Length: 285
Image (cartoon, rainbow, N blue to C red; front, side, top):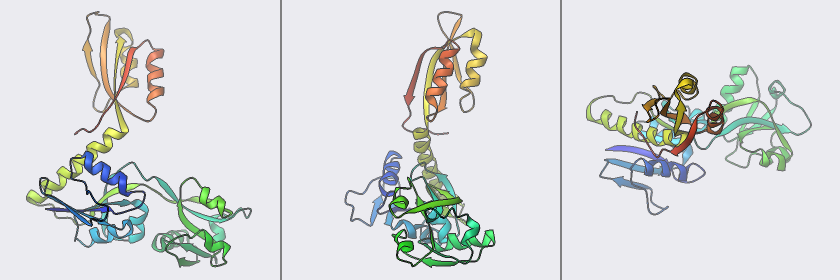
């Protein structure tokens, strides 16, 4: 039976559970449940703190886990990323007092508060910067105001929280994060267990793909077929079918959800008609 870790709370928890449900796995019915056994699919789910998941997976106690890329990097656990899941996007940035116009070089000799000390220390070492890293478990933004730190390193979304504490992000992101599916770096690749692992990855990948792509159907003059297929090449190749009018063809192709309106505009501009975009729930490759 596969053992899979899922975030028990926070912004990653509900989207992770939703993806697993769409992939055909059993959901927990009580938020207090720490484990759920899906006997039909031979998977046991463990609901753990997002920050601990990479450590459990890296130790070999669990086969897979869903958590944030930033948390994986900070854990320094021996795991590898199998899939990016397309939710929970954020940037991990340095931030300092507004008006100082700092760069990362200005961190030399400073005190930096963060809940991700390993990630910050590695970044500073890569940059050749010596600074004091102060570990805090949360609300690091207040540390500068209280005089505990000169700057912070934290997950930044809209930047609203930074503004409330008169802080501003600077420098390039330490990492761009999102929810990821991870497994142990030295995972066993043998027999039936590997088939079960591949099936779980394929199911989740199919759901994520369905969230990121649309199916586009349209009618196209045969005279502009080459232009149309260059606009919508699909994954391998678009499906092209003849219509009753020999001068027209029907085309079906997968297109990225992001930017689909621009694609439809391009098709309309070359004379395509009846352009229809349809949702995909899940698929297999």
